[in-house]
Image (cartoon, rainbow, N blue to C red):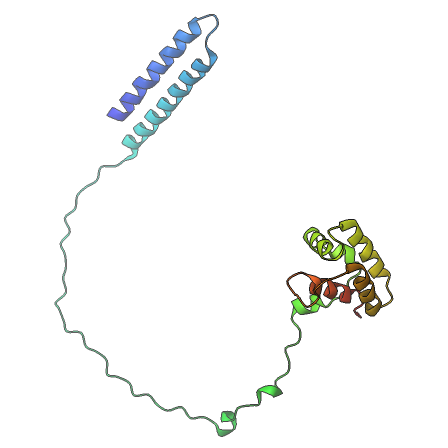
Length: 194
């Protein structure tokens, strides 16, 4: 038996003796009893593992290996290859006009951004509701939602623009950072043709 196994078995015996002492009392300290049992289990598991390693490890035989060295030879570099010119067909050599290629068409993101909206109010995220309310209705989100309902009831985009201008007051519509352009593009999508 290895020294590791022996020492862990001694630790397990000591922990089990401590458990016996604690159980002799009529009202044992349960937490201490659990700790002693856990210590004994851990020591037993380690001892078992160490003894399994000692049993299953086969002895290693040392074998002498003689190195075999091939005689040294000079490396020979291959002769460089001369590049041969490519023969190009005269008809294929003419480049086609890039304008003659068909257009790739709108990307998926572009098509989705131009898709008709069924409801302006439902298309606004919470952040956009707060941002557009601060821009158009002095921060009053319910007033913005009423404006959205009125815009949805408008006959066309021009009538919706007039309603926005009457409600919003002074807004710098040329400033793309404040969100006015984005709001107008959403309103434009309300009246887009499918």
